[in-house]
Image (cartoon, rainbow, N blue to C red; front, side, top):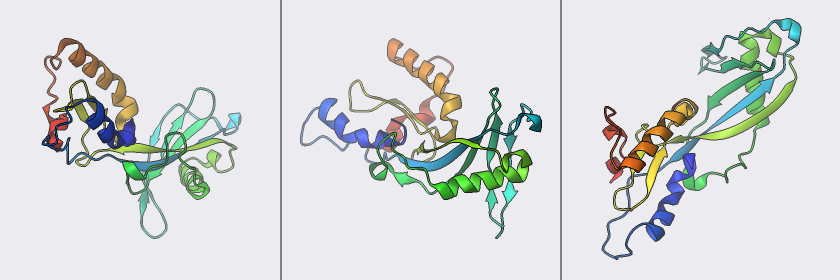
Length: 198
């Protein structure tokens, strides 16, 4: 559920634990939020000769602020550019998944920043743009493991921008843990335990 994971608290309370009035709140300090990030896909002319190298940049903007657009050339000749994030929003205030609005001025900023490091992107046609919310936890670490006091519920969220990279390993770790009843040997998952939010 990514940044919307915090919204699952009521579902877990209703379906996964006893309804005893004296039961303590479920993970009272666990809140997720989403940091909105925009991206754009451009198609530079073939003669631009875009290489396969990714660019992780730092650009000082007018006024002194630094932006760090990431530029990813793709095999199909397009270039994906990820812009900077904005202040995180609590999960309860996020738009519905799949309905995150794209802000044109942020896409324009991505183009301007990308053009500063790759001039072929200045006038390249925009093929698509998107916006998403990266999942964050209160302490910045992912929450991975069983939810204490809620039988059968597990969390795997809070990877921020590293979810695409760490998602497959996270899935394998949790699948093994759920199937065997114990965390995989040799992997210390204690720092990521959801119990830290009790």
